[in-house]
Length: 237
Image (cartoon, rainbow, N blue to C red; front, top):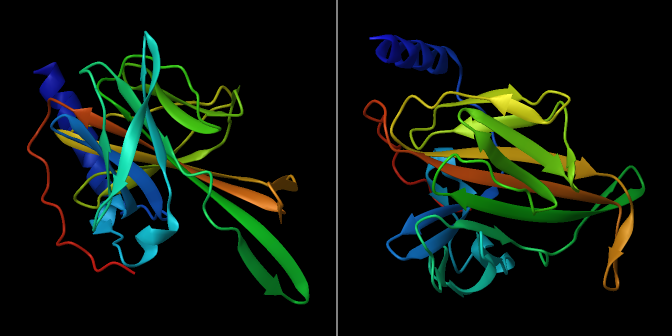
């Protein structure tokens, strides 16, 4: 009875919030023995396509296990990327694109060169995981999660928690980089976090003024109530 009351309270809280806004991001899904890497808006059921915006991406992916790391082969398809390589049931998967084109914007006579750094992680359960991406969000056990930037906790970071139906809510990390959130519905959730690093630098011969990191974590809730239906697929940009 107490667990049912907790679920009911969690659902009531989720439904009392408005659908949270998110930026374009990568996210990971498992399809049989393969991982799928998508680019778009998870909550809007938007998957960018090729030819189109998907062609700007060149993601790399790998498996992370207790035994170490294993690279995965990534192949582009019409609506996303498919990985090939051994993936065990307890493996975490990470993907990122470190080669996305630099975006140049001129406003008021000033030019800003922005580097977009999308990344994603999939975990098969909510056991604690070690961060490894520049901007990472990882389970910390139970309903707790942690956001880390360059190996250090990222306090006061906004994390958008998104369901396939489009319902979402924003939560914020404490000074220790941690946050808690209940997941009332069965199925996948995507946690998206963004961070702008305004330290100028160079990527090869390309100079940039700011790096805009966008990282997601996919968590699958095996128990809970029947999920709300997803919206119809959105048209790619």
